[in-house]
Image (tube, rainbow, N blue to C red):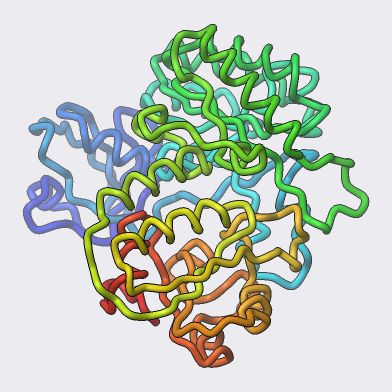
Length: 434
């Protein structure tokens, strides 16, 4: 049941004389378990809704409304307690985390509802028949699915879950129901690459366009892997071969079905695909197409400016050359600006982890303290910080970093336009300068 917290003044719920403390029991006879049930039926024009008042007396309402009208209800609890992962994947990044960090960093979510609402990736290893039927009935689309391989036996081994092979049946069932799915494969050298990647890509493409995209991302390896499955890092040669393989498969398919994480291109030392290749960027949160989008935004934002400062720009080692290229482009249009770019080695997780989003405050601090050239202010990307908070992974705050360095810190908001503004102006929109 969903217990009502508030009823909007101009909603249908107010007309029905619903009140705070009442409980919605079901819609069209289907239990009201969480807010997805409410959102689905609130978007419909005709349905029934069974409600219990504070004393437990039940009433069934026959709802007839226009599509744009809403019941106007909010609830005390959304019923969305996170479903956690049942797998023990050989590449799981959470299992490679050291102890003593924020509790939220150890949460393994694997919830199809969060996949629909927020774009989180799920393995579909913890759903049952009721969940599958609900996904189809409500048309929960798009879903973001971690496939890793379409070989059922190999998937069971990779996830250490004897039910993981059911993914093939689920994908076919959802595709038949019209569910759009964006899929991903975390590529482990010597495990699900090569011929296995060819097989998985071709099997997934059989479900196109319902399986809309396949992102391939390299597995992340930290130095905290004692006792875990031995995994080789993706080196330059491996990345070159993956890029060639993906290109060949896309030519075979006739569409850009497979998109690779930017990391493959960085490690191979070749340019990422052009902006147009990524379409609407459905997998940008997966690090797919982020570089192309950033560069396009930067070129569109650039204008002639005069700004006399020397800035130290901090990034991860993988994007160092790209960020240096971007800073040089900015300086062509702001000739009084001086910049230095440093790719910070990740001492905390290990040098194999080279993205900026997993750098700790202490590693950033150490790199800046050892930097010999003079500079006025520091520039960092927002993905180094916890969302909505000014704190790094290791608990060091932005204020503490600024105080220890004796420098102001500018935080870009992740876009190319924000990068340009951070380098060429003194403005404080959303706290870009701390």
